[in-house]
Each structure stands twice: as C-alpha cells, then as structure tokens.
Length: 215
Image 1 (cartoon, helix red, strand yellow):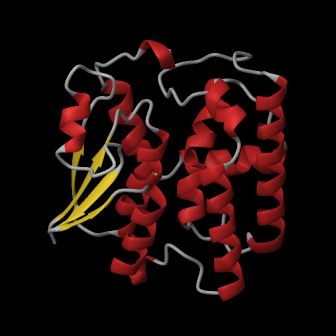
Image 2 (cartoon, one colour; image 1 turned 180 degrees about the vertical axis):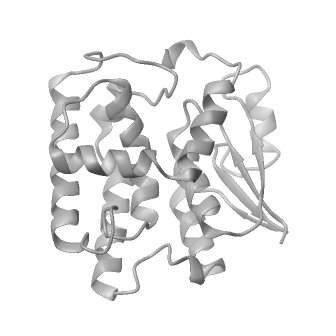
Image 3 (cartoon, one colour; image 1 turned 120 degrees about the vertical axis):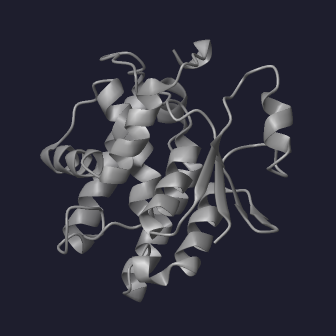
C-alpha cells in the first residue's frame, strides 16, 4: 500500500500528531516524511506535497488528503478492522462531536500553551482564557468517560480518533503544569503509555530544530 503521511516538526506540530496517530494505530503500512516548519525552504517543500500548503498531508497513490480530520476519516475507512470510530452509532456521533470541538475550539489554550514536548514550563501560559479552556477540556473528558468510557482507558473506552485529537492537549497539560482532576490524570497517563505516542515523543525529543516562537 503506497501510503505516505507528511508531517511537521514532531516536537511542535499538534495537527500532525493527530493525523499521524490515526495512521499509526490503523495498522496499515506507511511511510512518513518530516518537513521542519519555518525554515527558508519549508513553504516550497510542503507545497510539493500539500495543496493547502500546510501539514499534515496524506498521500495514497495519486490521492492527496490535506486536513487532519479528513485524514483520520479516510484512514478509518481504509482500515475498518482498526475500529478507529466506535461501532455504536450514538457513541460514534459523540466521538465525532468531540473531534470537531477540538478541531475548531479552545483557541486560547492553543495560543498560550503551544505544543512543545521537549519543554517544561509549569505556570507559563496560564492566562485566564487558557485555563478556562483547560477546565472545559477536562469537563468534556469527564463527561465522555462517565457516559462512554466503561470499555477501556480512553475517552470512549477503546482508543478512537477522539483520542488522536486530544493527544496534543495531553502534552500541553504536561509541559505547562496544568492542574488535573483525577479523571484527566488517568486519561493523560493512558495516552502517554500508548506505544505509538511514545514513538512520536521519542522522535520529537531527538529533533535538531528549534523554533523560537514555540520555545
């Protein structure tokens, strides 16, 4: 299968992590290309792969998919046996809602607590708006775990695309020392223990690039 995912810096690119996790959890064979962001030739390098000029981007033969959520949806169709969406229709709708909420929301937390897996900045970025977003995320996690989480350690029990979308938040909470309730703490531990997440993290820590804006 000629499947290739193009991602940005693993240390910083939250959108890339979401899509990459779905591809990695699918069990499908794939290649990856990492294009460091904010370099002199970054725009040209990304444009060779992605019609949007952004990462992540998935190439499957002649097909190009250039949005993180669309990539996750496509991979879920390619590998239905991976069960990246819940089998239950109601749970699947809830999972999609959680993904869409993350896809478009929580802007203050994203802006004030940018993803940086190498860093440790407890207390930095704790603006009132960012902390309100962090509290809203934890409330959503509690709701999902209470209503749908009986079958496992993840938001809807078994691992789904919803967990792909909140994995970068797990890293933000760790980097910036956000206070966690017990449910959020256990969930963050479950995500951090994923072999695929650990692979991504290990690669991120080895990257040579530094981007001042994210540091």
